[in-house]
Image (cartoon, rainbow, N blue to C red; front, side):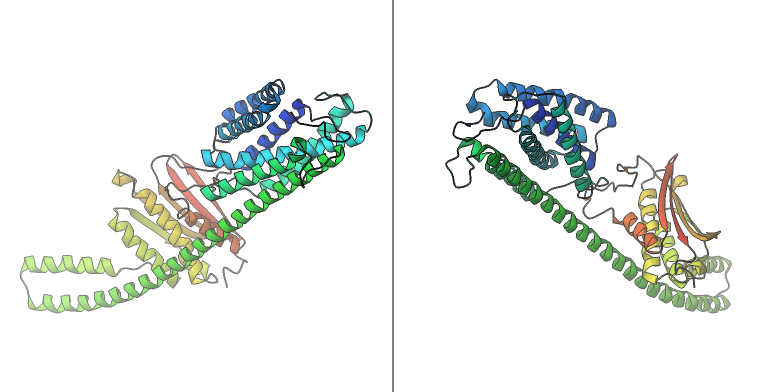
Length: 451
């Protein structure tokens, strides 16, 4: 595979079995840290078939002529790509992005292991591509196990297991370019020692190879960490924008309700005056209907919390427009210590999500939303329940995923609710059974929620 005649004290190349195992383990690391959307049975089957496939590819490359080496590496990369693609259920671009990272990790671990192994062997090195004895197997298990366990610990915090990875085209291209440059520079000495970046001594060549692979892995790690932070900042900005939007909606609703209350009050007096002047029975009935409608329009929720009153009243009218039966039993005094923005955001998002799901139901009898706010022992309980149709999409951890196509712009409602609950040392939970959806928020009464 390599031109080692010009390398002083050339060391034996890495056994192909070791390379195959290393590449397979690298795929396994990333399949377990990213958002896996493939069925568990399929993932297990693909991973199980992936190891013999990688071994077969490596030994096939070993019997091919030297000029086939680069094509053999591309073939191995392709098999790794298929493992990631089908075991994790990724998209094509996402699979390519992850496979490039796995390939660099495999190169790093394989090079580091063989460098340590050949150093410990000294003059008792094995033949090219061979496995020496049990000590080699123990060394392999210890180094591979330690390196891949460390990589898993690092990368599990660098990837989200709850949301799909969606690298951009430019990010994917940059990742492939980094991978190609890393692989080329790390193997340059095996191709030719007559370059400014090559080594000419066996141990030195492996040291260069390991160092370059480590730098490549570090660059890719930093790239993903930066992308993760950028996504987190964008998500936080969206949540904050939604917080402000909900608060502005509350302020606007409050102003509208105050105006409607004044109008309704004036109309009542006008109707009374007109009824005294006009006496026909059918006209009186018409005025009664008008009075009844005005009175309905002027009714407001009375929970004991003015902010919650505005939110529930405005959402009740939205439910009427959508033919949804909305019932609310709430003790608003429990929210005395909560900021108006948090109240508007928490209840606004919870009811908006319920309205969106319930409005899709064809049967008017099933368009029901129930809200309850009460205390139980040392907790404040907020519960919003509604019917829904279709299937709910959840991620690997059971969190609800948005059903909208534009995931980057939606799905923050539930996150905002969870964020507010955690801000008051509480928690949020979601249950769905028999097409009945329940969102529950528990807040401790001593967490600055009540006075």
